[in-house]
Image (cartoon, rainbow, N blue to C red; front, side, top):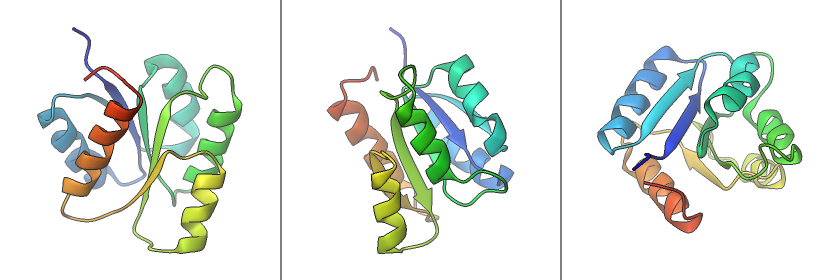
Length: 128
């Protein structure tokens, strides 16, 4: 049985490593990239079921990536979770307006992130 594929896009190698380890321990197949500009190519190559996007990155931000992917017929059905260290209602609204499926605050406790991903996988009937 094929596992759910998750692509993480974050400019922090430390965060990529930590979240990758946590999600792999949960049984997901995890890919990552630290360059926002590589996100589109990685999405097309890896065809993830879930995309976990940092919001603040050099160049293109997570909201813009989300918006472009949701407008593309080949990528519009990918579940997108945007995560940020900022608890800002206006920022959250922008994320949802861009098509994000959820918004999670960055924290050293990854339990909310893993629960959010499990809920999205279940809701969208994605393989697990």
